[in-house]
Image 1 (cartoon, helix red, strand yellow):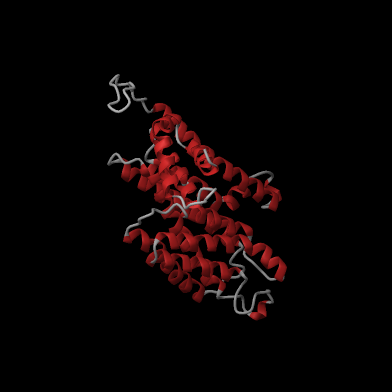
Image 2: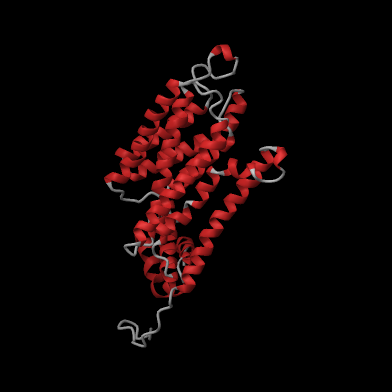
Length: 327
């Protein structure tokens, strides 16, 4: 056994034990046949493919096959939300406070955040016209720019959006990476259309009345409202799909608890601890960590609950026509 085969076998542990025993040799043999001569490590694509396949088999064995389609539905809603927020913040960045107000800003923009919002708007456009592989690359680029914005702004000593505006965008974008591999035209166009509508609506509102410190009060009111709307849409989809016996909407709703909770962090932090203390950085940090842990925990508990309720297939007692073993 060479190093490459040994490493493929390690990756094969992503699959359930019964599945590995039945088809493990076949799967590893196929990857070895397709590997380049002299290769010692599985390619990233092969590793990702094995991990995805193992996850699917484990979910199938647990009786929760609708989980991955539900996550993909949640990814679409997340990208629609992220694109709309990018449209709102991007337009607002183009309207800095009047000079007579004496409020610092970055040239013709409010802050360095204009670079990040432009990247997210580009992602929405690319998703509409390019293969999903390219769309995921642009989402990754926008995520990297969002994460890099705080240290970059500190190094350049320029203004940036608050962390509680950037954090929801990161969470929404990470979930957006789970978009379907072969999305329909409607799915491709949805983020771009939401961004366009957000741009038009925000330009109309900002044009009527310049927003002072638009990252301030909207962070405490607007973002929680968006989180609530995201959950409402998810709940309506869950109920509508459930009428047809489709559980995707329910899984999407549970998956959306995390990004919706992150969007609501400013509002949740306002009710945390002594009221007279106001919203502090410590409150925001504690609330964000609690939400980031609670959302995945609820998803995991739901998976465990559903898997326990799913009846385990009983052995048929019929011998396998290939090996003679009884099921």
